[in-house]
Length: 263
Length: 203
Image 1 (cartoon, rainbow over the protein chains, first blue to last red):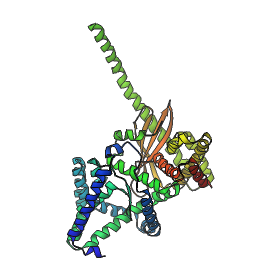
Image 2 (image 1 turned 90 degrees about the vertical axis):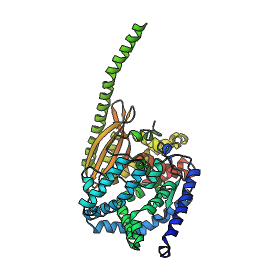
Image 3 (image 1 turned 180 degrees about the horizontal axis):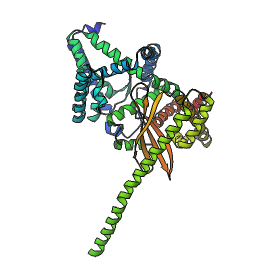
Image 4 (image 1 turned 180 degrees about the vertical axis):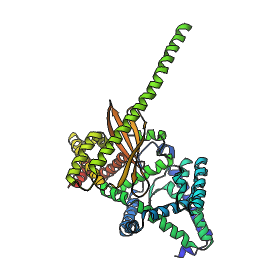
């Protein structure tokens, strides 16, 4: 791959420029703030024709390659193996999660995530076992897209990324920042062991997709407009993550959200 | 004057003192009722709807019965049609609600037929409005982490009905509405486009 041999600084500069564009766009076109989005179910999708095109491409790729691979993976590997892979991948993500917790001002979350990292790395065989999770410290995903939302950035608009799938302008900017700041990437590229980074990406993608086999099949089968159903589900999921809905806690914050459109 | 005022205050204070715990107790009672309602429905669903030993037709019949008894299908259907409910004619509304129920029945009959969950635990309930509560539950799977399923239960004068189900914080009613809205919009804003799509599904 030609871009792999390019100097790191150039890649970083290009990513930075992309990011700035994304930020400017969010600032100018993102009229809805993250706060007002919490109370609505509408999704802003001005690029729908383009998004539908990319979505169709992703869907074809998924049916031809990714879904079969995920099914083979599910079939060939025992449950404990897949659990180990997920735990290991999550543990590698945890330093980034801690950073996002801190940036969101969620110091309690940062404490839990840090404790998880230490406990699972030391006591869970380099993160293969989620010892912390079994002891009342559940995994909470955080990313820079959520951090931007906490800072008040709106979603901007819905965006379907090639291969990666549903996103938004804000979450794409977040993904770019998380990618640049990712310790695993920095380590791999500094050591000229880029394969580590790419392997991680592929395994993480396969792990995620393998867990979604039933959900995706259900949604394809039961929606009239699969694109619209996925768009709605993605936005709801992201908004719930931003609200940091704790499944064990009363959902006081979400009350208004529930109220829309019901008599 | 001061006496009457303080007397009034006292009366108001006493009334409040009486009301507050009563209100809290009432909320608790309502939450308990909602929890019991969902637990019972879940137990019945798991014993009567899962398993490979019943035919597809039989399963659909049982799902329809359970659905009509425990869900406010018309309220959900109206919500899912959103703003288009207002432009639909009376005949369209009637056909839509019937097609909508058929679709839900087919969907859930299929889901229960493939159900691989091991356990259904209702955890807690929280009142979110005068009539509605959210009941949190968990489906523990054979493999993988538990799935969070939340039920929005409406209390119509003691008569409890589910009006929405959230799977991992994704509302089925909202997803359905987006789906239907997209079909109508792509069909030139006509409700008929949705009806046609739902009719096709039935075949």
